[in-house]
Image (cartoon, rainbow, N blue to C red; front, side):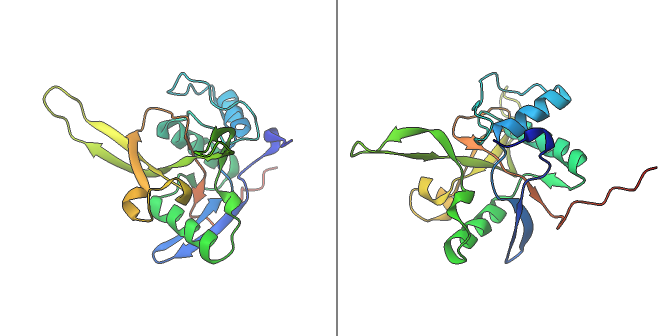
Length: 196
């Protein structure tokens, strides 16, 4: 079992290609780590649903806003500038998986299973929040809406077109099929000044 009380920023993979150069967490944030964040800060998630409760599984039912708050906490805690990855960074991670032999286990799956068409069972892979947002302007009595972009791993896509790689959802709501991972532009945690 992971000792979440002592977990800082998880192992990061350097992702480069085109205009992308960042470090992405090898795995999504776990429920245990997210629970530590809630206890340490008293933060109240925007969604009332219960996320996955197994401490070692990727957290779900977390809104994009909640994920950003976690990144801010993890930045202060670790000395590394943490944020959500962009869709371009996750696409580059996908290329690394497909072309350079990075383990496909970097893509998360939830504990539950779902029946396939032929009656078997397979893991249910999760989409991930990105730091990308879209805005729907106010119209006739409706306020401005902020939509967060999610990234679908390749096995959730309908075809290989970029249009099927992402979708926009309400950034204030959590979903059972969406998790998140940390990203950073920093190659290593910042050094904290010596005290004493």
